[in-house]
Image (cartoon, rainbow, N blue to C red; front, side, top):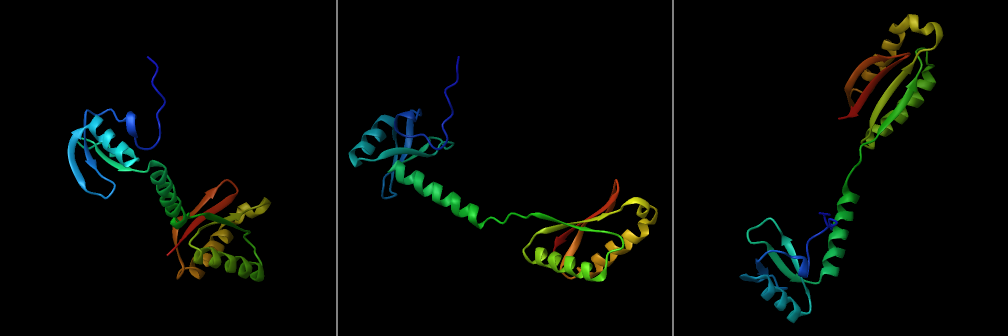
Amino acid sequence: MVQPPVKDGPRVNESIDAAQVRLIDPDGTQLGVMPTREALARAEQYGLDLVEVSPTAAPPVCKILDYGKYKFQEQKRKSEARKKQKVIEVKEIKFRPNIDSHDYDVKMRSMVKFFEEGDKVKVTLRFRGREMAHQELGTKVLDRIRNDVDALAKVEQHPLMEGRQMVMVLAPR
């Protein structure tokens, strides 16, 4: 047997398959438990829809309301919640073991800006050629970074070698 397509959202009017429902009128007054047919007739009297607001209750709770307006309000509420949600991004800043002091300062300023925005920062220290023999230089640079941003951020992932690069992740405090 083929399953009918699953409709998103609450069941409305004839799609409510419970024998009895607990009915709430448009004013919010509880009218009690009654057969679904009678609840549909009452909704028709108001010129509105019968919407199942709590399908898991026994018996299911249905409310008489304008379904189009209800859907619009739900959509508006969800978009408001999405607006207020802060997405934490991971920004990446790349360094070299023998970085110049001015370049270091420029990268640190952008890192501080990322922390103020609430983003995490992935610090990648890239080794090229013979620099691989002097990994202690890279460790010194990462320690310097950690000390400089200690007031703003905490280390989420300690320095780790991944191939030819050393990686450290910092998260804002």
